[in-house]
Length: 295
Ligand code: ARG
Image (cartoon, rainbow, N blue to C red):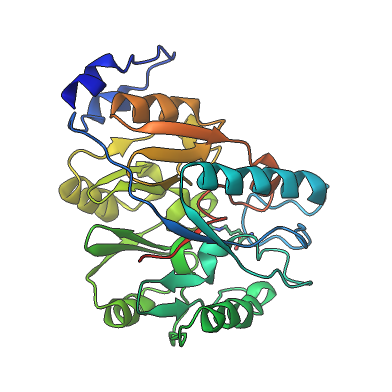
């Protein structure tokens, strides 16, 4: 098995960020686990309001391109052997394509999102209906939680962002509902308004993150919990390169994040680049479009 890593050539990519020295992820076998995802087609995708710095209402959006890019993402998962369930899109909810925000679903609990902005409030019903149709009785929180945008499971715990969207007071609610410990991490840069824009879960104990998106205290927490974390540079972070979906081996990521792709390869993962440029106009990429259902 170790031979696999020796055989994997590390591509030469310039310039080499100093942070690469930290990418000391152990050279141990990476392994894929079959996953289950839920996705919502961008049938009614638009940028008609701006609730994050990526959204510019004066920039045109091409729904056909968005649909084709989204289809390619779906096919990428299917080719990797994963299951993809579809959520019915609702007219008038242009951000519904960002399915990660719909909630947090495990084999026995489905927490439905409570959104920060009224523009997305209608999605609670839509994602709740989908959960009910999948056999769950959706649980809601008293405080704002934007689902897997801010709540990322790594191994036996949940990393939870706060500062822009999910309310810190929702974290204990989430912990109780999921019966899992939650680590609260403060986000400080509005470009990285959801945890999944600044931190990627690669397997049960490996993460990658962009330190400037976090408060000093959160950075220290992350370095302490994950000494082997991959530290990603700003060029990759600014194309939402951390907004990825990993099955433990294959890491589906925005194709523009070439530096991060090289770091992943170096750490024994297999990066799979996809172009979601049209969906970036809404402030989201691969992970935002994907709700993982933990089975
Ligand atoms: N326009 C959406 C919003 O601002 C984008 C959501 C992106 N989703 C995510 N998981 N980061 O709410």
